[in-house]
Image 1 (cartoon, rainbow, N blue to C red):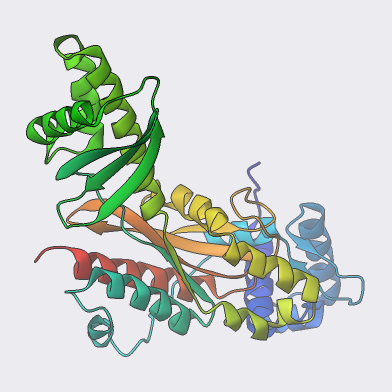
Image 2 (cartoon, rainbow, N blue to C red):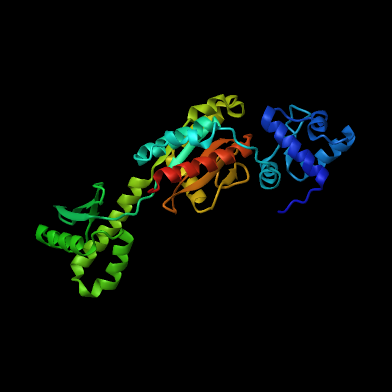
Length: 341
C-alpha cells in the first residue's frame, strides 16, 4: 500500500523516528515541535500524530503519552527520508589491513568481527560459495548396494558421501566407473557433469550411468552441506541493547535464531539475490523471523561474481544511515580482499 504524506507530516515523522532512534524514549508533541523545527501549535502536532497513527506509521505505548515508530513507519523512513551522513571510520584505508588478502577463511571471520565492532550489533557473513569442481572421484564398495563416494576438489578438499544403489556393484565395476568419470569429467563443475551425462547417456552402459548420476547427486549435496557456513560475531552485543535486555524471553528467542544457522542462511540467501544494500525490518518483513529485529545486508563478490552475503543484525531502533554505510564499505572491502589482484 502506497502511503502519501504531505510535507508537514513527512517532516514530523522523520523527526519522530530520528529522535526515537537516538533516545529510545517515546516522543511527545513538545519534543517533536523542537526536533522538527516547525512553528506549529501543540494541537496541530497532536492532530498530525493522530493521522500518522491511523495510517499505522506510529503507535502509542500504553505507558506513555509519546509515540514510537512502527515497522511500517521505519520502512517509510528508510525508503524515502533517510539522509546518509559521512561515516567517520578513520578512513577506509585503515580497515584494509584487518582483512588479510592471502587467507579467505580469515577474511570471512575478520569481516564478521569488523561488522560487529563498527555497528555495536551482530555481524554475519556467509562463506563464499565455491564452484563444486572435482579433480578426482573414487567409489568404494561398503556392502551390498552401499557405496562410499569420495570426491576430491582441485584444492585438495575431500567430500565423502554414502549412496544406496539399485543394484550391487563389484569393486572392479566401481573402479571402472571411477576411472571413466575422472578421465572424462575432471575439472568440470558437478552441474556441467550432470548436463553432459544427460546427453551422453546412450553411449554409456546403463549401470555405469546410474552409478555416476547417483555420484553426481551425492557430490552436489556434499558440496552444498560443506558450504552452508555462516559466521556470526557479536551476539553478546544484544545483551546491552535496552530494547531486548528488559525481556529475557525475547533474548532467548534471539539467541535461538543465531544458533539455528539455517534461519540465518535463508535470511542471507534472500539478500544475495538483491543488488546493493537491502534493509529487512522485523514485523513487516516475512524474511526476518523476529519482530524487534532488523537486518541490513549486501552481497559481496569475488572477481565480479556474487558469492556470498554479509550484514548487520540489530534492533529495529538502529541508526540505519550508519548501518547502510558500514555494510556497504565492508562488502567492498571483502570483495577486494577475496578477488584476485
